[in-house]
Image 1 (cartoon, rainbow, N blue to C red):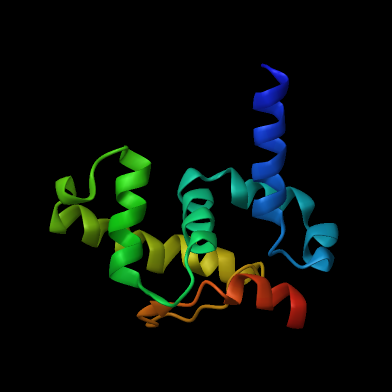
Image 2: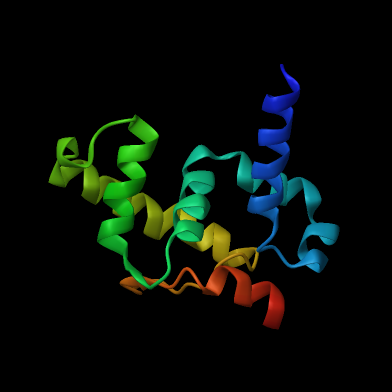
Length: 123
């Protein structure tokens, strides 16, 4: 591994950990690292960090599926998008919410990326 690769990994880790309240990280470090070990959740956090406004869950699902499978957006089928949306609602978003990374409640159709930083600032 080159120094450049190590710097990129370090920068990515800092970016992923930034929204997490330090108290949560200190009290549950292994669980937080396990949470972020999941590729889908890392892509989700990165995608949300890139956004400026609230994003529909359906849009997040297609973007996330595209990134995870390394496919163009227009290649993602409605069934694959729905599969990812269900995975987001039942697994990834609740887990991120549980650790205070992203406030979210089941049934919310929009995700506000600005809430990633507001959780640690106001949590």
